[in-house]
Length: 493
Image (cartoon, rainbow, N blue to C red; front, side, top):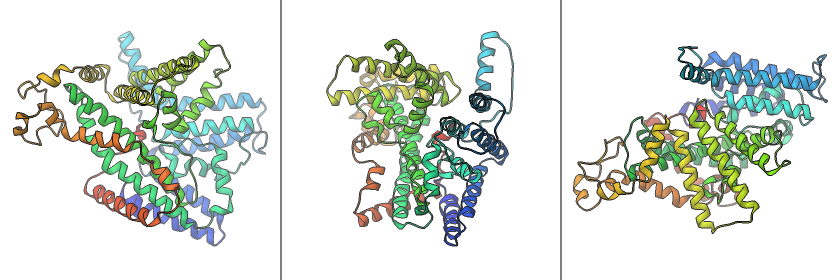
């Protein structure tokens, strides 16, 4: 079930909301939690009920394991060390994730290296498995360290399944949620939270339906396998995906925060205007914040973090982001993307340690262009397709010599919409790419302004916010009724 569909907005969300607060009002608070768990499981099973058993088994297994290794829990205690239980539980979680996400990838590479024709069919990636696996492994480590102190199965199930974060994050810590669900302040309807939730949800759905899905048209056409490109179409394609992913993920994060706020729950900020960044380290403090936190706490620091010699720190950074790239998917393209970011972070650290700096406009430009280039590898179907786009991005000559007869195969749907007569006055490449390039320019112009989260928490201006919220919501819902919205990009990871 998508956040941006009428069935979620007009049926699932209102029913979940009113029944939950009705149960709280008649002092059936525990039943209210059970209701939210049931709603969340329905939300998950709406996609494919066949993987609901796997999800429930994962929840039960990790709850038992967390109780067994915690110094505070009175749950099952096993006749082996807590560390051994922790290690075993993490291995089980990673094995399941690895089986569903990486088995075919390994088999394909073995076949390529050996000439074998091994196959293992019908392995379909369960929705959200990367996110709920990381959330629960974080819980296991927190339990072992004594950071998780509350052990009730319904509370734990609500922590894992709570539908606003279930499919694509944020990746949560147990203590972030339990203190909120246990607080009496969250049990009653809070109209200010409802207003803020609807406001940021409306911004998020507009980002997804109107902006991201529009950029998707040009990104999908430009990244189609075998497409040919010139200078302008290459930049239009890469930047279309750069902004599609930005508004798609940003829109999801806004809608997740908004939906959770209706229930008086504040999810951690997971997206904070990353294209404002002046260096790659700042980018990762703003993009998928909870994933960056997870990589830091559970990979980078255990590898030694900053407590090593310089060369080891560089290795730790590189390995962490290589693994972060592979977390997104079983593909060498993701490995290349992660390696590029790991290498950039190593270079940034080396640069900063020597006290070097550069003007902010230049720093922003270099960071943005680097991120845009790396997204090409993130999105392309193959290395050849990525190289084709990157080659076009530096083919400046095509900007001046391209004629209608020399134009590449029309892989982009908007070519020619302004009429052939304009080609008498402007290069044909500009005409063909006018609309996406205009959208990209608008995206660059609005990037420096306040983001949706900042606007949401800004006090006052309720009249203006109400008008904007209503307009964005109506436009977005009308658009999604007219045409089916695509799934969020991070659902694939």
